[in-house]
Image (cartoon, rainbow, N blue to C red; front, top):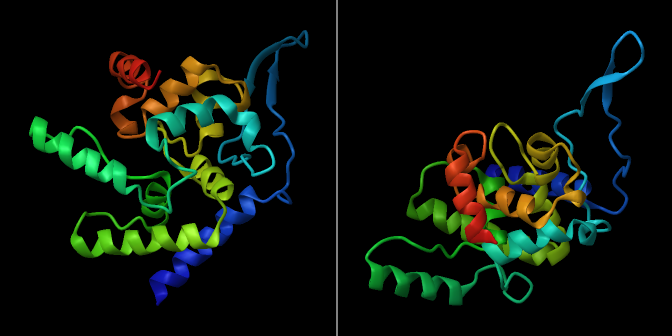
Amino acid sequence: SCEQSRVERSLEKYRSEVSNFYDSFQPKSVKIVDRSGKVIGEFYRRNFRPIRTDNLKKHHMILWAVLSSEDREFFSHGGVNYTAIVRAVLTNLIQFRLSQGGSTITQQLAKLTLNLGKRNLFNKITELYCTFYIESQFSKEEILAMYLNQIFLGEGNTGVEEAARYYFRKPATELTAEEAAMLVGTIPAPSIFNPIRNLGTALNRQKRVL
């Protein structure tokens, strides 16, 4: 179908971005200097997606934060974490409110790739099919790298590299545990949980991730 072809093209683009053969240059900053040559400002270009399978482990802090917060069983499940779903259902029955989700990183990548909008049964089934397709076509490392490059983190930032440079003025490989936890804390609602829009909420989310 047309929709399947679009998804496959998007995923192939993501795969090329995380491939070991992807251009691995470090982005050169644009420096602003005064008359004497002293640097008074420094800017990095946006839309940079440098996380690849060959440098994934260098991003250990963001990996720790995103796996512990979003998908602890990522490397052991087949795309859908049924244990997490059952746990969420039981928690919801006990507390009578939606307090935990069951979406895995692969499911979140499927949602990002499909971008179907409103939630209904057909879209959920489509996302489930896409989830299993992703798991069958890509390694766990590729899925994780694609996710980290595509996740939206507020203030117009897509991907953890772009967000790290925007919020903390440093590459994602240099994030501290606290900084990584704050970035990951924005994932469920980036327009609300990011530190520029709502610092108090962002700090609470950071504590929860830590």
